[in-house]
Image 1 (cartoon, helix red, strand yellow):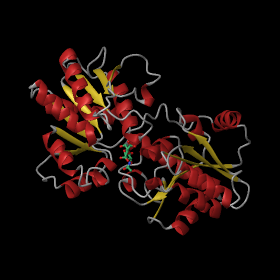
Image 2 (tube, helix red, strand yellow):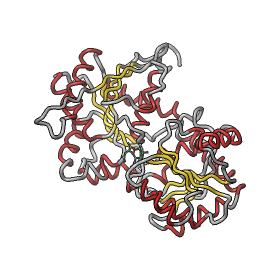
Image 3 (tube, protein in one colour):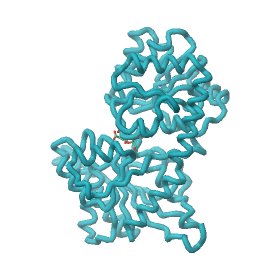
Image 4 (cartoon, protein in one colour):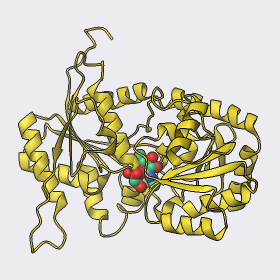
Length: 394
Ligand code: GMT
């Protein structure tokens, strides 16, 4: 980029849930890339994260990101400490102290509401609010009658709205009665394909065998999620049981959450507890994905499916239900297979087909990697965020 095109570095406040969930991953990866952006070289944008904890994916950052912790005060009167207002207060403090241009909040509830409140307190309309919607903040929480009015209000007050898929854009307008005149930009999730790459499978397998203390069979099927009911983790165990009767495959169930005990108990009931491994939550998914051959993702709904995209970047084909924004990511029959929702026999059939055919896995894996690098590259997607920031500020 020539110096004439060079834009000034922006001062951005980034707000997200710090957990392993996809919205926190998107925010953290975006923050890191913005802090290293060459569009405003030499130093990148100035990014301040605000939240109750440092996001998981920022914990080994190279020190370019600032983090401001929201203090949540306990008080005998508070059965529920008011996080929304504590967050708004911290936003006010950080905006004023660092002269922020933008508050980019991820997940509408309550982050967008806190941002609106903070701007009202500061009394400066020049601070722009960008709200990234991620999924259940619309499809479950946002449409719930107890949150709908405030979610609608916060979306309408935001200067820009982003969804990761056309699917979520439609759901937002439908569920929250957002007028079609309100601009909603679809900016897909992205993956850093230099980090998420196919790697050396033999080495990755050795590494995982060392950590798990087991010998991996020929085919490693991988699932990763937060084990919430909508992830349908027991479908993963059932499909594996029916598709992989011989000993040539295992299922890695990575992550943790409310449905983990049910999935573990089902594996025991089906007598496959030795082939279904629950390593817990992983801070680094890359070696686990590099050691895997198929990504099994039977969610009831996904606005996008970032976990599937990260697997695809590691050249792993995906077997999933055709729900939400998943078909915008995985091309059915090319980079994976999509079964109708809750059609367990079809999900099983696709899993068996891939498990039994290593050349098909390779072909589909290569197609998956190509799709991830060509359509969801970090570089191009982050540039779209920067462009939107500049448009909103102009
Ligand atoms: O909305 C959620 O359920 C939580 C959110 C998260 O924080 O994990 O996940 C959503 O955002 C991700 C990043 O944009 C998407 O990849 C996930 O598909 C989406 N989850 C759902 O829609 C269920």
